[in-house]
Image 1 (cartoon, rainbow, N blue to C red):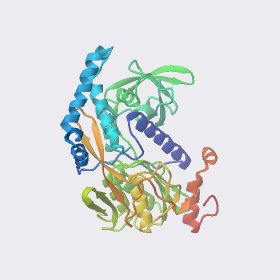
Image 2 (tube, rainbow, N blue to C red; image 1 turned 180 degrees about the horizontal axis):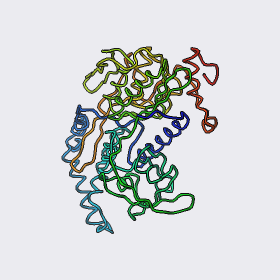
Image 3 (cartoon, rainbow, N blue to C red; image 1 turned 180 degrees about the vertical axis):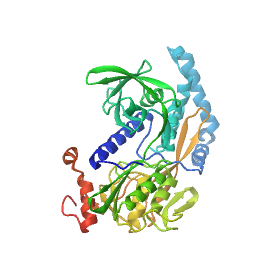
Image 4 (cartoon, rainbow, N blue to C red; image 1 turned 90 degrees about the vertical axis):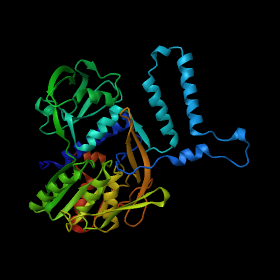
Length: 427
């Protein structure tokens, strides 16, 4: 784990990575921040089935709501009509018709976090959540023109960096295939591939077009970056709760404390969430063993409690947690637990308010169905879904100052740690 050299440079990198993630969410079919919850329990949609087969005692048999089998037959009726009557029937893609029907059913549930991902998007998201993937080590976004991918971050020591790729480079073709007309996920799939294989990228930079050959390899995506600030304050930024997040956080906390850190700033701004177990483990780095972190409230009044298991890496270090409107899901569990239990004060702006839990099902074609199965409550019993966390200190980010290299929220957190109060930009 390398220590960050410049806090503002890191903040820019975090912002650009979040922009890239949001592009992926929007173009890949995601319906909101923090939809990365992956847990093991399964709840069938039996309530929907019950509704479909219900009857009203005031109606006659001709008005009885149809069973699921009856309704499925209507789907096949529509399918047959389209295939027999549609003008350009030869152009129909039956796979896409099927996936469209599934998407329509999922959309009709009316929950933005119950969603389906096509196989390409599902594969990309699963790789990202593992913390490792095989590729070239560049984070990309897709501008409104959708005819190119733009490099918004180049991972240190990555194959992309080694061949000279730069932030701002536009990828217009991959192995001769133009990006124009492709979705974000399809374009990313062209770039990723088995370790040891080459990919030819056509790059535009400052009105110049040229080719770069990059050799793919296994990439570990760093979810944690850190540095020592003045006055023995350690700074740790966590960008997502992937499978490696807690291990990387422990390394960062250990190194910072070895260097003399006497206080901490934990930066969860822009963090869209991730894995439930990582949220609990990361909370446990700052809370005593057996401390309640979160409760999950599911169907039929079932409640699951999640507690700290083991000794944390930074139990007694004073700390402030930074949040904003893009801090969601697992971020809100960690920040909310630390605030609820008096372990840390929150500074920044209201968080996103994603307080629901989704389970993941892989369908036979490789698509993934994510279904909301529960809502979670903080240790105090507070539900935050649709509400979010209110910071102890509301401090807006001065964007003009930020572009000049000044992070007003981080500065306020430092002032709070040093003086026990902040004197400006607070409400």
